[in-house]
Length: 398
Image 1 (spheres, helix red, strand yellow):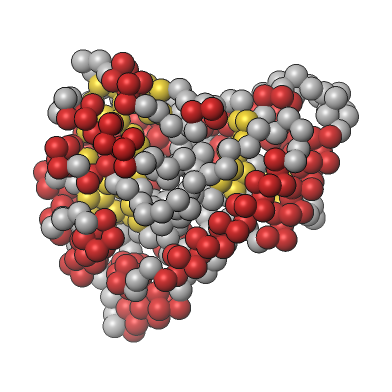
Image 2 (cartoon, rainbow, N blue to C red):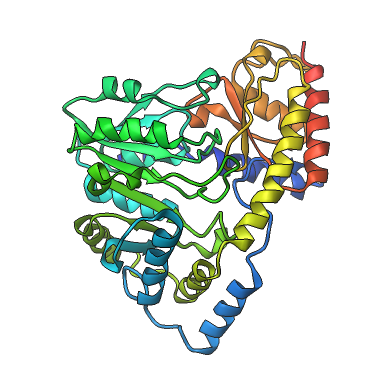
């Protein structure tokens, strides 16, 4: 008799991974699918990173690594925070995990108790609420929309705080919307949390370097709340190292110790060779991330211009990350050529996949069911073709 745990039964599958899987299945069946569902760079890791990994293998880094990470990687992360963000951390405040997703999970499981509430603005990355539920806490959503730039205000957040509020999750630049909070907006939020010292701020900054509007601002820059802030970051997006699985947190030392205690029982230290590669990435400067960001900006400008030509497609030009989160309520209620009614964003995503051979992700998984997410982390040629396919498929809806 199959009987999975209640914990797992209540967990939703990742819609981004599910759509990527469907895209792969169609490709395997010989269909010419353009995959705009996946959230990863289409670039390769820089050569100096690969060289460092090869050297680590030759130098026999094949034994268990320290649970929290190698000392040289912890020091490289601290130097990154000092040089790039003007933030001071010590190695004892850093924990290296198997990707930023693992780092987030460690934080939620280390700090949340049953009944705790976690404030999450919409749209949110698909895994935030599921991770919170795994920690037996309750996600509380703060709605935003395209007119607000998909950003919450300090006033909105303050109104949602209750005696059970334990945490606030901030993603800037945002997946899926590409919204980037300004220094003033972050300062206003910080003032709210300074009045509520019992609330932790989990700042997901994995898209830090994919920013089209200037330097990145971290909410940890405000001294009055720095001890409440837990920064989540990693090398996946900035250095095109998604498969290397290196993420990290920067937090008060007692939180870092708690995450190490948890990780020690679940995974132990992460891949030794990948850690050496990540050290080289962080010590290698920002030339490579800047080159990728310049390419993403060019793609963003072209792709959003093409999508904006489609009648009924409401496009918000993202300030960061590599996604377009388009509002598509105009198409809801329409009928496909085969008679299928487009009742929700998921129906439209499936229609675009089967009829247009373009994979996108429904906004339902991100908390905004009237939207759909397209990734522009692919070539200019494929983006141009995808926009044409999307326009053609949507024109066939009646």
